[in-house]
Image 1 (cartoon, rainbow over the protein chains, first blue to last red):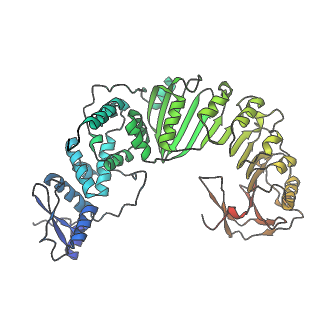
Image 2 (image 1 turned 135 degrees about the vertical axis):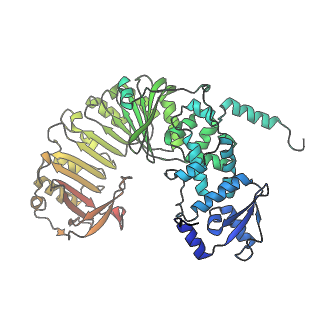
Image 3 (image 1 turned 90 degrees about the vertical axis):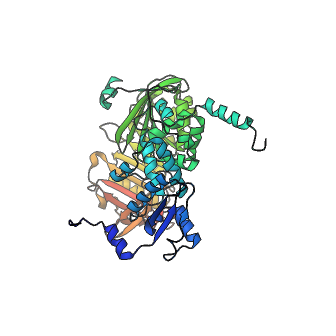
Amino acid sequence: MSVEPEVPIVQVEEVRENPVLYKIISSDNHVFTISEHAVKLSKTLWDLITNLGLTAENALDNPIPVENVNGKNMETIVQFCERHKYDEEEPEYTNYIREFVLPEWDRQLLSIDNEELFQLILATNYLDIQKLMDYCCRVIGDMAKDKTPEELRIIYGIPTDAEDDALERSASDSPGPSG
Amino acid sequence: MSSKAEYLNRPPQALTFPSPPAVVTSNFPLFKLPDKARRHVIKSMNCDEILFLSLLSEKLKETVTSLNLKSRLVSITITQEIQICILVKHFLADLQFSSSRSLSSMDEMWLVFGKKWRRTNYWISKGLSIKTWFEHIKEIFHFSKIDLWFGEDSITHDMNEIRDTFNSCHEIRISNNSGSEAHVMSILKTFPTAKLMLYGDLFENGEPPSEVFIQNYDELTIEPRLASASTITLEDLLIMNSRNIEVSELSIHEKDVNRFIKHWMKGSNPRMERICINFQDYRTIDIDLVLRNLNYEEGPADRKRYFKDNSNSYYPVETICGGIDIWRRDGTLATITIRENSAKLNMFVWHPHCVTDRR
């Protein structure tokens, strides 16, 4: 390329640090490469890497199978983690999610239909990525803005008490696995 | 109602809970998420949305309750109308009930929500009583202490019903137009409280009876009659049995304060942790007259000590700079400070439980 692009700091550091890379295989056999800093955002993956004893030398030779996450969601997750790998660590919270404005890049990334968002949250929850969870939940929470309770019931598919009771009754009436 | 609608810039919508309307397309299966993720979504919502969700089903109410969201402040204003104000983190929910009928009857209510002191959302609720609303919010926002403010026409309500609905009162404020002295005394008898604030105008002779002064409140604040000095005397001050005492617009003089301090040194007002007074029209206090013939020690202005105000949950520690130290016979130390252009006198008593080493 003749034009020198503005090089993000992230890349400069990667080159300088010669980062460790890991391979992840999704449930539908797509292979992803992810840097060490990025994969650390997933508590589940990082615990797995630590427990498997993967090192800079053997990481790429030992792809990590993640059977609960398909390639589409894994692609979004890898993009997200690479984007946010150098973010400052979030403080722990207890009762509330901290206040934040969803950055435009992330809003674009999460501009997907509700079914895809649902699947992404399941994957994020499984991989235990706090920041992505916060962002996904903010998108879902924003659906409630300026809505009436009746509208919330529809948007979130909230059963009435009678429907909950009926579901519980049918669950208790249905035979168990052996029956 | 129209003025509220104009103020809020759009017509209010009725808040009801029957079957949902037909025209909402977006559908996210919140209840199919794992419990942890579902709770995460709800925690990221605003107070009004969380409150609405909690009303939609018992199961969802249980989920919201289990989030352990805690209100920082709940104040209930009782006039002809009743208003419940709840502060949850930086969200403010205002429940304004317009009817003066029984607290357990169905009522119309304005729900006004704010965030960081800006109004964000509002609704009209029909079909739930004040009692039902209060019990609901108490459960989901986990509070036990409330502040009760009595104002004009509060006498129209049955005090026993108010007590039974809003039990466990922490602070009572009775404003100067609340009604007759008999009504005020009825409030005080009906609601045992830790903190009390009232106005001299409420009483025929301009000040509460001595039976109020001798109560062992955590905090007693007496505001003066409108545009006139407080009639509270030195004798009144000496029988006050509260930990924190605040009296404004006193018509007594420095020599009375001097005598008050001398009595304290000899053992009067043993529970007192702090007293804050000012004279009529906020006139300058002559500290030399206050300290006349007292043994005292003036501390350097840059000396900082930290006073723990056990009854103040919002500002529990106050920094005391400099000040004048005095001691009572048993060795208890107190510090006198004069602030706000020498118009306000504070006396801090350094009981062991009032001493802390940092803010």
